[in-house]
Length: 413
Ligand SMILES: *Cc1c(COP(=O)(O)O)cnc(C)c1O
Image 1 (cartoon, protein in one colour):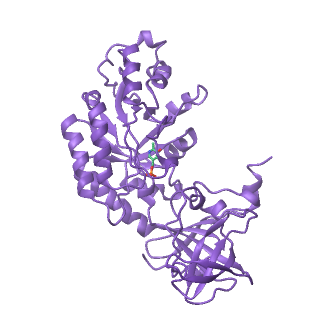
Image 2 (tube, rainbow, N blue to C red; image 1 turned 120 degrees about the vertical axis):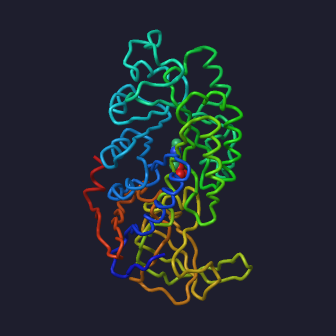
Image 3 (cartoon, rainbow, N blue to C red; image 1 turned 45 degrees about the vertical axis):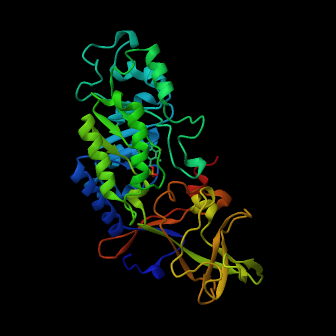
C-alpha cells in the first residue's frame, strides 16, 4: 500500500490508486510477454474509463457483456473490442457488429441465427466459400462460441456458470447435437470461449482446462483462438503465475491457437478504497458473541457509505470488507456494527473492533473497493453516489467525478 492522505477526502468516495493499478497491469503484461497470450479488461468488473488510457498501455483491449459496455470500451480504449452476451437482440446486433471485432455467442443456435448478418450473406444456405474450416477473412469479425466445460470449483452457486441447467455456454452434448443437425455450423467460427472461474488460482484453471480440452480439444484444432474467460486472481499475492503460464503455453503449443484471458477483478484487485465517515455512534449496544467465545458490547454506527448502495457485493456475495486499523469483533477494545444510512434493516456492512472509541466525523477506509463496486452501485433510498477519485503516481489526489441529485433523478421518471 502506498501512502494516501485520506483525511483530506470528502466522503463518501472511491479512491483508485493508479500506482497500485499500474503494478497490477505490469504483472499482467509480463504474462503476455512470457506467453504471447492476449489479456483484455472485462469491463463488467471495472469500468472506470478515466483509467482506460493507463490500462490500454498494458492490455490488448476490452471485453464487454452488453452493447453499452462494448461502446464504452471501443470509445475509450485502443486495441481489440470483444463481446459476449447470453443472447443478442435483432435490434442491437448491427451496432454490436460495428463496435466489436470479436463476438462470442452463447450457443451454436445463437451463432447460426446471426451468422448471415456477420458474414453479410442472405442465409445459412448461402455461406460464401472460403470460410469453411473455420478461418475468417482478415478484417472480418472473429466469432466464437462459449462452451460450458461442465466442471467448476465455484463455492457460491450464484457465481457458478457450470451449475445444473446453466444458461451460460453450450455443454458438449448441446454442442455436438447442434453439429449433428448442422454439420457446417462451425464454418465462420474462429475460437471457443469458456468462463468457469471465480476469484481462483491457476490450479483450478488447470483442472477446468483439462475438462475443456478433453471435451472440446478436437474442435479447436484449426481455429485461431481460445478464450479462458475471467476469474483468474492473477494479481493476488499467492497466485501461481508459473502454472498459469504453463496452461497458456500448453494450449498455444498443442493446438496452435492464441490464448485470450479476460480478467475483470484481477486488473483492479486491491487498487482502491471506499472512504466513509461516521455519521452517528448510537447510545445503545447489544451483546455479541465473538468467534473466540467471548461476549462483547456491540454498538451500532451509521456511516455515510452503504452496503446496499455502494458495495452491494458485501450483501450479495456475501463478505466482510476490511477496514484499515480495524480488528475482528472482540480483538480490540471498542466494538461496532457498521450500517448504511438507508431504511433497509439488512444494510449492514459488518462488525469490527477498534483501539479507540469512534466519534462522528471519523473517517473509515474500506480496502479493495475498486472492482465490482462503482459498476454495481445504485441510488436506492435516494442515497447519493460516492465521488470517484484517483491518486496519481506521486500521491496527488484528483476528483475524477462527483455525483448529485441529477444522477438520482436521471434514471427515474
Ligand atoms: C465476469 C466475467 C469475466 C470477468 O470475471 P472476473 O471474475 O472479474 O475476472 C470475464 N468473462 C466473462 C464471460 C464474465 O462473465
